[in-house]
Length: 400
Image (spheres, helix red, strand yellow):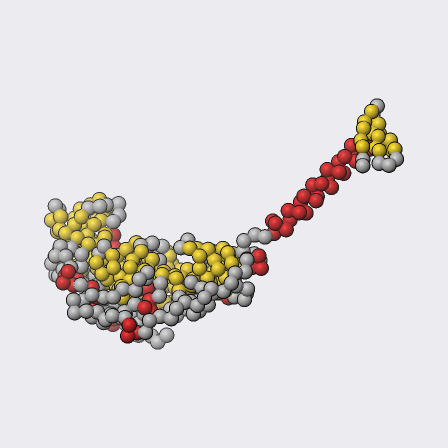
């Protein structure tokens, strides 16, 4: 046992024998004791600091989040490139990891991610049981004579773009019923046989959307394939009155269907206007208000009702609308990638900000991808993120 006493500037240390040290040596001795204790505490805490939660960052265009660790488990939803996913568990195979998402936990394949941290720190859990096999195709009830469409419970989509059009049928050739903003959740009640276009249900009734612009939650393979478009969208139930609600701070009413026409007046956000016609481009609406008649750009409104029931107006705007000699596309999102080929699997050539205009010189056979030309040279864009002026149906089709 060590006993310390200080008297007359002398430190006496009793440890079996007696040593007398002056006060300076005593101070150094005590300081060394403190350093030794602190070093031991830091060394003990070091392993704990190293056990940080690993993160997987998605490095593919989209990555499926599944209900279990394997491709045989259903897809819950998909997340885009760059999404950070904190790892909360693993099954020990070095491939499948359970991650935390804003929608709850799910499993992803780490081969499509970039790892931050040490995956070995994630706890190992038993492999979950395989999901029960889906019912045989014949077990799903077919649509009845009254147009009732069976629903697969729990299948929904979340809009994953700034604004998404809801259409009368499964393709961009069908008229737009309305549009919904990013983040909107919609129940899915059917699908087209291409598994791209989904029949959804919302306050607008029923309509079709392109699923590549959404996050899908649930297994769309269990949904019925819809072939009768009239039954699916319930055309007979469409409201007789079609309205446009101004969805911007202030919107110009013009004398014709285009920005080249003079401004009649302007109305503030929230104003409701009766829609009495539509231009053949599907963008400009003829509306009626206390100002009389005029045209508005539907991209700045929320449309209530089915514009497919209003007449197409060609000549009543009192003038000849100039058509561009070469079709052009105006970027209608914050920034749009120009790609080297007609699909997201092709590399990005450049990107253009919203409002940019490019000439359209060709199209892909799917009707979605357009070949455009600008200062960057040539490249492809997805027309769902652009306003197209002119008739692209006359342009040549380029093979992928």
